[in-house]
Length: 538
Ligand code: PEP
Ligand code: MG
Image (tube, rainbow, N blue to C red; front, side, top):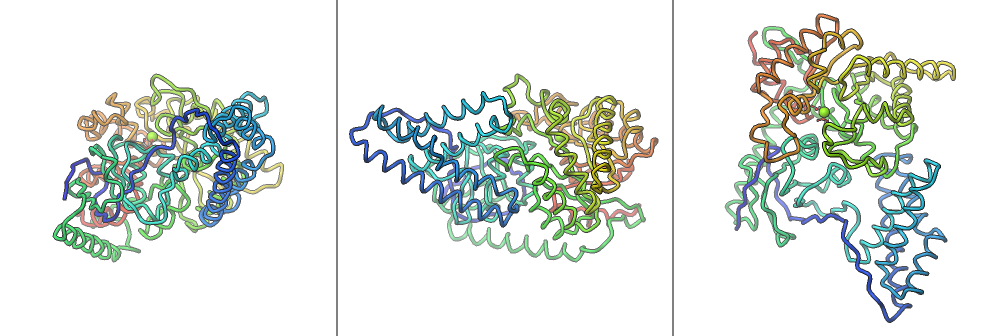
């Protein structure tokens, strides 16, 4: 039995087999071959397998995200069989007498470069698709399995690092826990683990030879135990049973109001990253959704999700929440959330760079598509729209003008929409300091303490070396929150907190006393927080 320590992201126990997850990117070597026919046969078999995998992914995606969102996988399967693409690979193998891996990678690069240089946006966005399908075939030829594919058995995923786009593609039913060498407690991968209610450890000295071993993850102690002895296994199982009992006990709080014993109400909403998370929102009896991180719709997709795909996603969430508030945050990409097909250039300081609302205001087509989908979906439930990374009144006015234009367009086409509240995230010191001015422009504020802490303290939330001084309790952060609540209320805005600090129960009393109207937290934190709130006497 071996024990390794790390930093825990979510308290909980997982018992299962380790899967050592390796990034798909690997350089492909050019090798001369003798038998051209054999190499062509290897290529054809790999291509056939790739088509089979894509058809399987398509079926799964139809079940999980609907036909419209799944269509891209069908397109990918068709692209693999495209005459020009196939001819190009065959030609490279035959004329250069090189290995199939190299031929597929080279053809993939050529086609993707050619698409990337085209005028038409549709063709330009095909560049990422060609790259993707070629990588899949190369992966099969090299004996690797598909993209973020973690197989059929439930596993503990062990990796150097995981990008949010990789995490979100993994099958949540099969994911028992994450263990990574890198990553910080405030990164989006960590936040996803909390949202999905999956134990996760970071900063662990992981090894490839752990692959296939039995392990116990103890999120209470922050340890991974490999080849556990019977006593450790029994203790872990006992702890899992206790967790289930504690959860069952909390279930008694379902249907109860979020109000202190002294009668002070507060709304407890949930944070989600995908349509599927609504199940746990309902299971944990949240009063609404306070933050739908809509960028994960983009991260899950291989190409820009079109208006229809987004409309279906927002409509599904709104309908499933049956009249309860659903606050959708508009696209917040950039920094650690990179989407290939956006082709964002590398930056010196990505957290302070071209991200979130800055990208949306700069790429009106992308922004308008999302807003139109949101407005249309608002006819089917209680949708509110929230804008990330705001720093000025001018930005808010520009956004509101776009929304007004879109509403007019919908009116002209006889398309209905609901009465949407519009709010902004307060996650920059600039927004907190001018919250009195911003409050006059919007209906609500939601304080994003993750970024507000990073920018107020000048501490990169992605940098694990700084985790110990990333102090969201710093008086500067708490004063910003207080100031925002006071300014919001003075001008008729309600104020919530949707950063991770909202779930910090050592501050619940402080937030209530400040007058915070809403806390939006991971679904699994709703019932423990309800318990805490109902115990306060004031
Ligand atoms: C925040 O910054 O607090 C927030 C909720 O947004 P995100 O964590 O997605 O950046
Ligand atoms: Mg943020």
